[in-house]
Length: 88
Image (cartoon, rainbow, N blue to C red; front, side, top):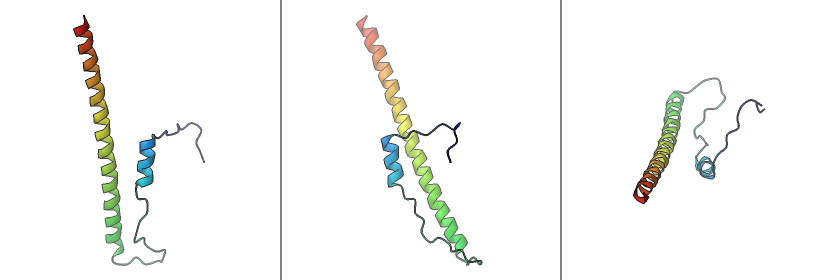
């Protein structure tokens, strides 16, 4: 159910492709039986570690992309200011 006051996320084509290519499936999921086996905790830790690693990679890629965009923006601004100074 959608919340009317919550703004909708607009994803770029590149972000949509990242979401499509990312792996959402989990392997070795535990069953719904009452008792947890001795290896379930280790499987949980491994799945959690993989997911946290995936999220960290996504964050680092996002930060790297943002830094590149900011750098290009600053570079372009400096080039424009140099052009205006030289044209005077």
